[in-house]
Image 1: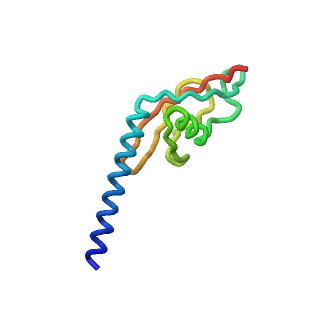
Image 2: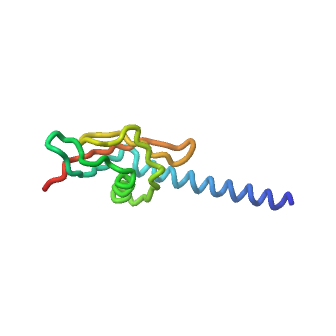
Length: 108
């Protein structure tokens, strides 16, 4: 069944190639990206609720058209205040990059 194993290996390599190309296009689209999310804040500039990965995913999709998964977003410390935050996007074991998230006060 060596032939089957070779075909399976070829298919895996093709899939890996597709994944790498997709990762490259996402990285190109989002490199140096500046994603903005507006939130309701207290007078001191802290958020009533921290920014969720889902909110980041939705903001990235609005900005770039790419649909990421929530588990691909890595936030070291919860985003709980306005300002700039570095967010890591993890596409695979060896593929990750940073984007800038700016949280601005929601205008009433």
